[in-house]
Image (cartoon, rainbow, N blue to C red):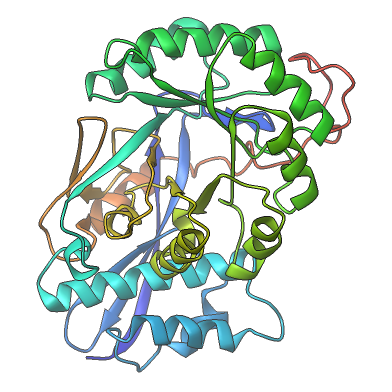
Length: 383
């Protein structure tokens, strides 16, 4: 079996609500979802998810190769761009191809990927995460009630601009999840909007009222000294890593003893997650994947010994994607379909794209001009 080509599709996920973080809010309820389909001469096709705009930079490393040699092909892709670098969009393309290769490998074996990777249990513990900064208090409660109905006992809020607002919402989240646990786990995600002193002051103020399990990305992702300072200054664990693209970017954070929860983005692929999980395990640290549509890395999370909890952002799938998994008992229950269990209805995707305008490109991933420079955290502060 050899890789012969690919097809690239873009569908949409309808969140049914506004989504965003401290850096901004998307203008509408829909976001683009990028789908890569790898073709083979055996008729099997592999599915990978995530933006892959720089696919042509690395596709030559896998074209004509047996997709079952996934880890070797992953290194071939990294080698292909070692001079110009593999970060950013290139790492996203590598991740999408890597997912599709693992999907093919498990399909060739006739089993779900979690079995191919050696997991015994199909259940992946999770936590609810609504990308919820734009929601009013009533909408926030309604959203997390849906997660509570599925047994979730842990949840993560977005915030970092308005302390009284964030405290009120954290208390509401605690009340909603409290129906499943007397001590629900509450996490708080600032998305790199603070400097280290702001982070310690803000989290310390939250902790006078709320017992936080972790604070996520309190300062810039590469700031090892800053993350270590925050870790020393607050009770909550410090979590980061979703935007790191390569093992080498974790090294200074681990050497500085700067993080407690090692996070990995789903969009960077299966092999990257497995390698980061091993790196974290060598330091006796837990690993926690940051969600993406279809939760492809959940298969790998089921197979590593140090997985803590998997972020679940939505209980529905993007248009045209059917995913063989369920949400119950506070986590993800993986199915038995071979591979990642993701089926793609290309005709439905094309029809939906023809009927609707493409999702807006603007959104929360634009860093505000004054991020980390505000004297007073304030929801009305100019960005």
